[in-house]
Length: 456
Image 1 (cartoon, helix red, strand yellow):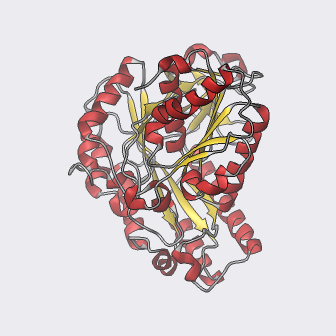
Image 2 (spheres, helix red, strand yellow):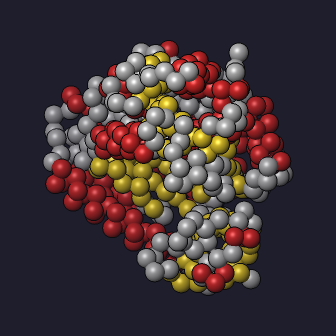
């Protein structure tokens, strides 16, 4: 039984690290707490509750998580501090030892966030109301299951937070166990809700005014494993919801990006010509060491089919550089393969050693210096490809969904094929927020990260 009175007039601060899925979940947590009477803390005020949703994809991510926890504790003395997410699942005891942390929730437990807060935060509130000193007794309470097979819950999420686009969580977990990755240990095995429930969430978002929704998850192409449905069937069902003008698919494994899905998106009403596909390496030898489930031939086929059916499609690609086993010769092989692809952007990640992963058994280790050099080369290649993609559209007309300008920034938005567009400061009117407008695309902005545009 939830005691909503314990939440009334409390203020909460939220901090999210990592992927779009984490941001979507945090936004949903904030909405749930708001319904219980908790409001987001205004800037400059202290929070009664702090929630940190963590990432653990790299060693640097772990470091940033610890920094964020310490900062939230320092800036909000006396607040009840909750830490959840991937880092909390993988290193719960380490987090529990950080001064000021009150509650650690793993991937299985965060779905019951409100219940845990009701049980644990309410105790603290009652003690404080009695003017008792709890400082010596406030030790972190840890609720985390130990193995991936025990992570079974699914926390629904369809929210936008302070963004214009909504993010719909369609899947969680992963069964792939790539040699470099800890995600199956952090998020559990692949699982998903039903198509029917997701359609209902989207219809609810339409009522709130949503125009664009991004499908998120850990391995969303694996959708349907727990409901005996298929991802293509989900896409077809969502495409029928007339209130949504745009859908985007956040990331799809190459072996799960079916030709049928590509061909459907090419003639779809609402699914945009925009794909994000993790390659990780352009060397078949390295792909085998990573235990990836495809080769460069299959990846090349997917890119060519997308471009044949959707010539204007934006294609983003993830690449890991400096993985164990990636000799200089294999990196050159990777570089030249990527250079040959008709893609729009690279997301480059230096390989990070993760405890307990099978990659640690691979003998060849790339130095940090070489990782930096390889990253620099691929980032330069990415800039060249993105610049060329954008340049092709200068002078053309396009439909843009605008987003509210953040402080100190001009209003921006994205075309159907994910070209970032900015308005001149004189046209940066918040009235355009969540509005679709036809624009004429001009030249690049000051840092070449967007095209300037004028409203038609």
